[in-house]
Image (cartoon, rainbow, N blue to C red; front, side):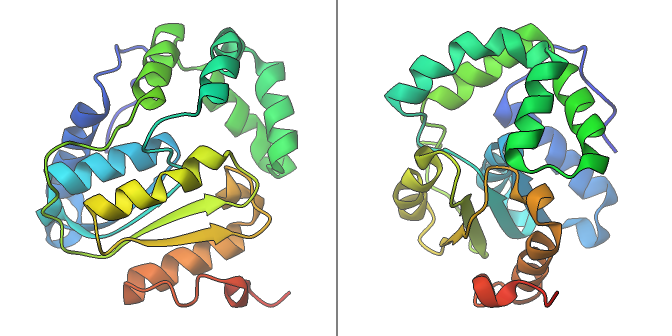
Length: 212
């Protein structure tokens, strides 16, 4: 429902959440939705929950370092930002993350289309804590997931996010990296479907892995 915006100036996560709220009102059945946010989308999802709680039926986020990056990450990431426009960089990332071969071209092309200015703005926005200072009014279920093999800052954010949203449920996806939705799409789909259907994460453990 949102047109491509690669060439536009990044408005920030709060404005992105407001855009998503408008899409939900106009297109979701009953004007509410089960919200799923991966990586940067997870940051936007939490702002949606904060700014428009009445639109969210449930929320699952994964790979979200909501309390900011570690000192080491802040040191290591800026020199890589110019490389985010290079296809070879994202091909290497796709291989390291276990992105299936048939999805790597789309993964790479989507990544390199983001403008250098947007990449810099994204880094500055996520480097610091992104938890809104105002209280949350969202009463519904929310699940935060971290891949076992992704950066520690994602797991480190769980306590602060749980303080802001006491109903928060958390889970660490065994053996998974940051984009575990493409590493193991069957597991991701099972966890997501269970949470959306029940509002609980009981099945979000190794028993959720579909039978081979």
